[in-house]
Image (cartoon, rainbow, N blue to C red; front, side, top):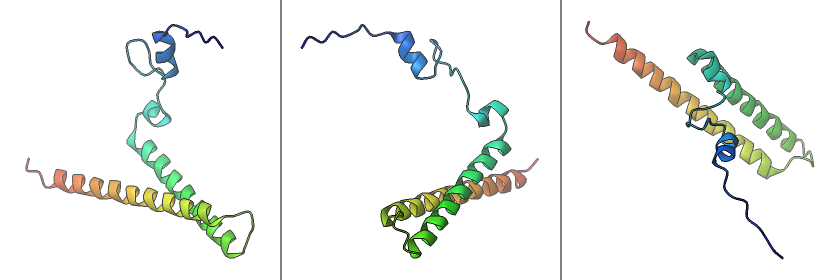
Length: 107
């Protein structure tokens, strides 16, 4: 079996990574395209809400002995929802602390 390696194509590798040859991103995410924090935060909150709803649905299905729902999938969904919620609380606490710090600055 004779394997021939192709030469490394830097431009192709950079394009697959979503970058221009100078290292700048070719496409931006939805949140950065609009450029505002409100959109990014709303999107993150929506994702956390979706994860919590999915977790609750799986828990309900498991309690009803649905054979297509496994305990492992339910536990993973619960952990994802918990981590997302904890991250959201952490961001909220940081935002409140930043607001408090700014309001307490002397002008």
